[in-house]
Image (tube, rainbow, N blue to C red; front, side):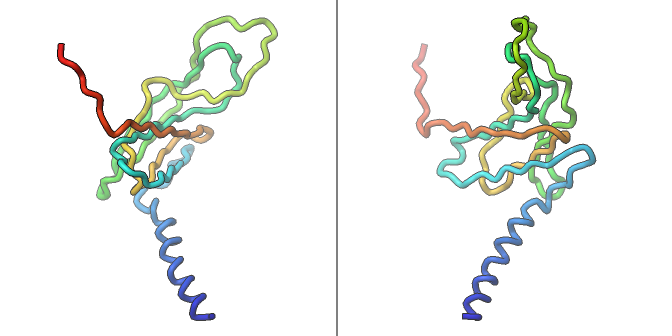
Length: 156
């Protein structure tokens, strides 16, 4: 029984150590920044999928206008490793459309993202998706996938 327990512990320790070592190559977050890690599950045809990274904050809004923060995610590469990570160096001010809210309308807590085009990266379950953002920001993601067959385009 003791030998079986030692065998189980011996087999699980490398897995636990490998899990904690997965971020070894990535820099520690700088002061005022936090690191968020997305572990993607393996899937068939990973080339047919993309990951959309969405950064923002949950804030109080008027519930009527479309709000967004300024800023832009950047992709950087770890020298000597070749691994990519993503960083939002600065969260800009919140902007919104300018529709008048009805008088006495209640405030609404809602997730407000950084504006601009969707930030899409390739799907790769072999490496973590590491994102650095200013403290207080949230990181969310979506998986986009395409059918395996592409549609032909007629001439003309």
